[in-house]
Length: 328
Image (cartoon, rainbow, N blue to C red):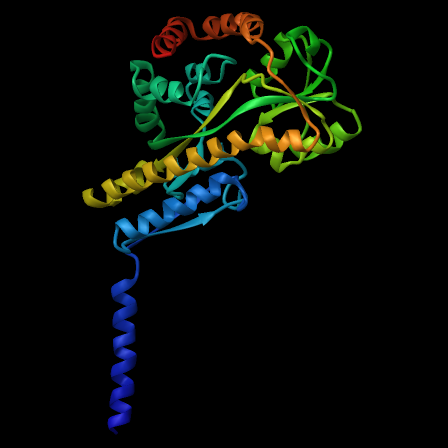
């Protein structure tokens, strides 16, 4: 009888213990990045920080590899609808909803990571954009991280802009990337990312552009032996949260969410910067020739695209360029 009572007490204690330590808030973060990518590694830090700082009240489950949505825009819609709590997206992607945000993607508009941080957080234009995101899309920017700077690989050496003339240049569908290829004299070519390696290998295309981390991860250095540091577009990554999620959390846990995102974003940035710092040496060891042309003529060549941007967006576009230049 005593054994039975002890058994019952043990089961009861186990139930009570499980209940006591069960998370009060079970949240979800969706992303397109896979588990081997820096974004996912940073998201793991975010989840860990949330759990520790909330003393177990918040549990974050990660959904990589586009499990919940095909891309970041679909994830943003899920945040707006309140069916997803967190996701990643670039500042420039906000141009889908607010056309003036395209300014952050204009080739050579952004000098470096510190510059885009100032451009988003220390200018009236950037602050207003974040307010629009919150008021009109129901999402809040928790933190901002560095996600690499786009460079060019090719099947011939590039020492100056004239060397890019006529290159069959694979770029994604984004207007800024296509404009870069067009205005440096190359021939912009779009294709699925999954097809790029074979197209480079067979010379179906002559060049492509991506951050160094992607070039390394996709092993493009195996099929292209020239890397040009064109530094044309800087990618950031925003840690986004649904306003509905934040409103459900008490004030102390809202603070935890913000602090955890900032810690994760710093780690995120370090991952990319450390990888870029060592990438050049890695490529050289793998037989890649690296060139660093003077970029003044590249920047000057982008002026027609800048003009297109201001024509589309009028005064708000002109003010955006002035604001970003003011914190360069």
